[in-house]
Image (cartoon, rainbow, N blue to C red; front, side):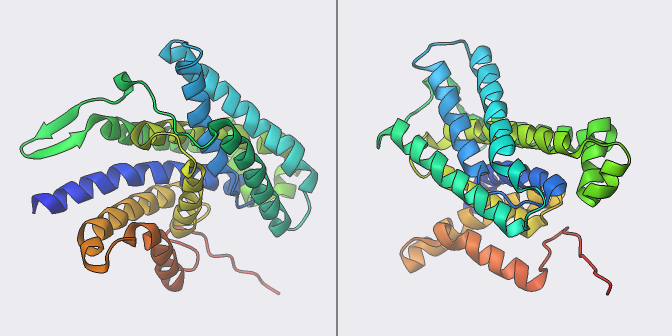
Length: 294
């Protein structure tokens, strides 16, 4: 029984990180109707920039965080301004391919900087274990999970109660109608890419604190996309639920099925989950079903 609880707790902490990446994908889709692959690289560059400011440059923790978020926001703005904005009015699949091109281009830079090595944060960021009976919970993972929940609450409040958030919701419903009411749609696009880039950077820092910075880190963005698809591409609660489910499914598979099949269950769990969810609910858990009338 204790092993089961341990796997569930570990899965929830990992799933929270997946959910945060999924939330960044959902934020972009809610306002622009673009499915983004680029956020895997925004995640990786957030983790790498934080390491650069903190370790080689030796900046204080608070300043390293502020600079990381500022640079992440700048990268998000540059991607929107020079890669995505020229494609406004083009088919959604064209914009999707552009996000893939951005991913590949940034991946080359990321791998060039790493040069085949891994990077780790200082030991003071790797907190102790929290002991609850015979159950040990890593404090770094617990802190990351708390940050995830706090960010989801902030994003939910932002979309519901702020003027900019309401403008984003209006833009998500109908770009032309929102523009007719005085909302500057292009500014909304820029803001959403900035916010989603910062969210991805937070996810990158939290992830790298658990598993270090190395070459497969950007591909966590693919799991974030799977989480967004399973939860519903326009639903933040769906991204949270999908991420937690995927984390628990991966840990359960690794704990119980790997000894039977010889390993590898964790690597395919996300795709099995995506297949099953889309077979049962093609629009995801909380996705909106579009009805077109002729």
